[in-house]
Each structure stands twice: as structure tokens, then as C-alpha cells.
Amino acid sequence: MAAYNLSNRVYSKIRPLISASMDARYMLTRNYHEKVIDHYENPRNVGSFDKSDANIGTGLVGAPACGDVMKLQIKVDENGKIVDAKFKTFGCGSAIASSSLATEWIKGKSVNEANSIKNQDIAKELCLPPVKLHCSMLAEDAIKAAIIDYNTKKNKEQKSN
Amino acid sequence: MITRYFIRNFSSITPLCHQFIIRQLSSSDHNLSTVEYEKIANETLESLTDAFETVLEKHKLPSDVFYSDGVLTVELNKYGTYVINKQTPNKQIWLSSPFSGPKRYDFINETWIYKHDGKSLYGLLNKEFSNIFKNDKNIDFEICSYGKNSQ
Image (cartoon, rainbow over all chains, first blue to last red; front, side, top):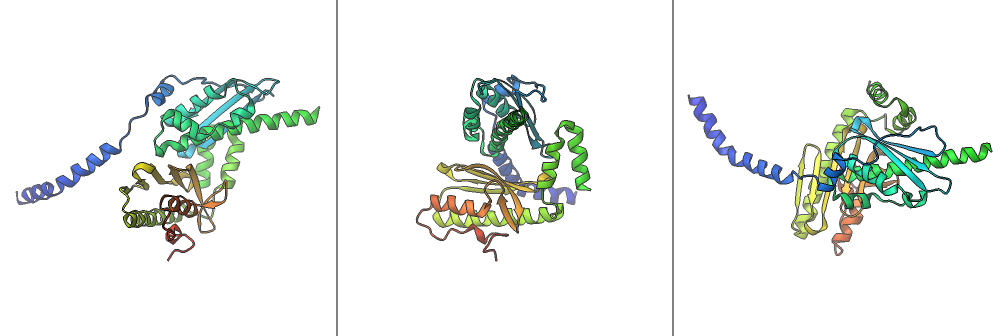
């Protein structure tokens, strides 16, 4: 009984602290922006192309150990225009939304235009919170990696011709 | 042991990305054990917390510095929010700056370096905070643990 009283007294002392920290936690909880949820629930351009095809560039970035892997592929026509793009992402909602948006944006653009897409543009469009900016960076890296892969293939092709 | 764990993990998830595995393995610093990383990263974040508090107190900027579970959040009112966090799986420290966006820092030559431009975490913070507090010529994050001027 004495122990119960004691624990009760201790609890009433620390309770304000507990509820204060819970308030702080509540304030820190942010909801995803509706655009993120939209892309997460209806991801655009999910899928993959044959990566051995000469017109396909494949970018694979991220680290499975950290929980984020992103594969983004571009299909480029003879004029250097990206006619189609596909992605597959294992990761958080923001990572999925960032790559989904990235494929939407790069479709119809030239390779050079796509290369100039910045992570800030993606983060701004999706209203990503500070801690999730890394996801938009991953999408930028994926676009760049896909373009590099495509260019490497083209260079090899030219050399062999 | 860790290397083996990595390889198993990588190959089970994406067998097609062996090139990527090699890149990942060769880029990570093998001299740094997980225990060492934990110690260094914790020290870094704790000393950064102190440094942020000192600077913001000095300039009386309404702000909030919050460190818990390896995540340091610095809310700078109208300027935005910094998030600096431990990324244990790849032994990095991640930074999200309201001014310059996201960066990933590796522990190279006894300090935290962003491999893309070779610049240090403390260098970037010095630059950005000197920009906020233009009249203060004494902003120096290099005094934090593993900085050039650490005590």
C-alpha cells in the first residue's frame, strides 16, 4: 500500500512532464501533404522496361539498408526526347511520391531538360517537410543516374559502329 | 560480419544491382566500426546541439533546438528548419538545410565531409549562420566535436 501511495505520488509529480512531452510529440507529427498521398495511392508510371534495350536508361539509387531504393528508367527516342518513363520504389511515402512525380515531369522533356530538374522543385511541388528533403534528392539522383546510363550506352554504340 | 550482412541484404532485395553493391561497399568507410560511428555521431550531434543553443541564445532569435534519438531539429522561426540526423546503416550524418537542401555527410579525415563537393558540415553551417547573423563574425561550428577547432 505504501508502495502504491509512493508510486502514485511520483506519478502525479511527473505527469505534467509526460503530458508536455506528448504535446510536443503531437505538434511534431506532420501529416503528408495531399499531393504526396495522391501520388502514393495512385502512383504514375509504375513498372519497368527491358534494361538491355539501347534506348532505355536505368538509374538505380538508394541503399536497401536505409530502407529506400529507387529504380527509374527512361525511354529515349532518336531526337533525344524522353518518350516514356517508369519507376519502382521501395521506401517511404515521400520517396514513392517523389519518384512518381519525377517520371511525370520528365516525360516529353529532352534529356538535357530532365537533367536540370532539381530536388528543390520536387520538394516544393510535394510540400515535403525538412526531414523528407532527402527523398526528393534521391529522385533527382535517380533521374541523373538514368541519363548517365543512357549516355554511356549511346557512347558505346557509337564506338562500336 | 557487417559486410556480409550488407551483401546478403543487397543481393536478396535486388539481384540486378550488383554494380551498385560494389559502389556502395567501396564508398563506405570500412575503418569505422559501428561502435565507433555511434560514439562519433552522438558526440557530434550533442556538441552541435550545444553550439546551436549558444548561437541562438546569443542573438535572441525565437527558435527551438530539440535533440532526441539521434535527430536534431533546429527551428529558426521565419528562416525554416534544420534537421540533422544519424543514418546508422551507412554511417553517415544527414543534413536538411532550409537554405541549401539535403546533404549526406561521411566521416572522412576525422571530420564530416559531403563527398560531392568535399566540403565539411561545419563549414556549411558557418557559412549559412554567418548569413543569418551578418554582424557576427565569430560564428564557428568548427569548435564542435571533430571540427578543426574542437577542444
